[in-house]
Length: 408
Image (cartoon, rainbow, N blue to C red):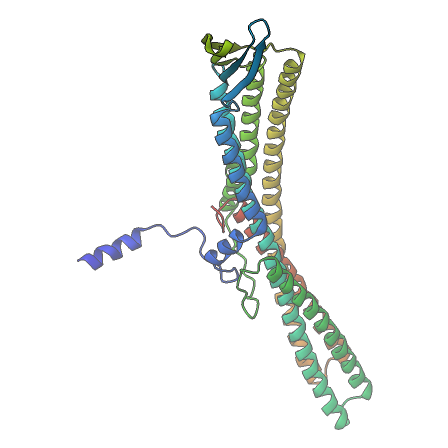
């Protein structure tokens, strides 16, 4: 009974919108690699800096001050020396409203730093995705060049046998050998690009375990509604927007704090003194009240300007994020469409190359026509690979921006 209930619950549980793709590294490995990124570590350290600043604002800048003098006075007419001292213990007191604004500014500073830290993870994830697809694309192009070289090598061997049997001209053998040499050059070039892409990925994210061979690239063909939802989430969950809004609120709190600070904080304390060797003693209250002037007014005006600038910058950031999300949505739609067209072109090009190969083998089609068909097939495969990489990368980038892949 218990097992059947668990089975029913499992069947009723909603399936995840995005399953683990075979061409992407495991999520836990990616997150570990992101956490070890120097940029992420630096951003996390700045959160600790902001927490320290918030704690300082919470307790305030004022501390207890002890001031005193010890002196020896001689009265000639009396012929005596007197030991005297004067001591004042005081502390400045924040006027009402200042402490709450300091605490608010400190808390908002922590929010800003925390959102910048999350955005650092976001940027690291985007960098990893770019390097990952660069490696996958270079590896796929290398496999394409390798397959083309193998096909042309096999064809060249067949031509050589036919030349030996006087069934083909020596010119055909030269043309086939030239095609093999060109394919070998393309293979070596593709190998260099592939090896560089892997080396850069491994050096940038050394904690990410790379497979021996790059997996085949797959494209998650998402519905129009899903793509639009990802674009909307990219705006709603943007740490850039949240950080900019928090910074605007922090600057506003600091501006209000500067206006209040035009009235300086008074200092209160106690004063004790002894004169004439103890014949005169005193204990009293100490009060010091500075008077604000043009300097404090200028600082308040500066803080007000910074608050206005931060508010405008927050609006700029929101528009930039919205424009970026809209651009990614439009590009991803176009990339997916281009990949579908390239996939259809590849299917037809492969079919044409296969027919040309059979025709050349039975002698109804010239070798030059076959080599041309093979070249077109190679270029069609390369174009499909490029289109597939671009489409897969675009979808992955949208998922990262929407926080549905690798980051929360």
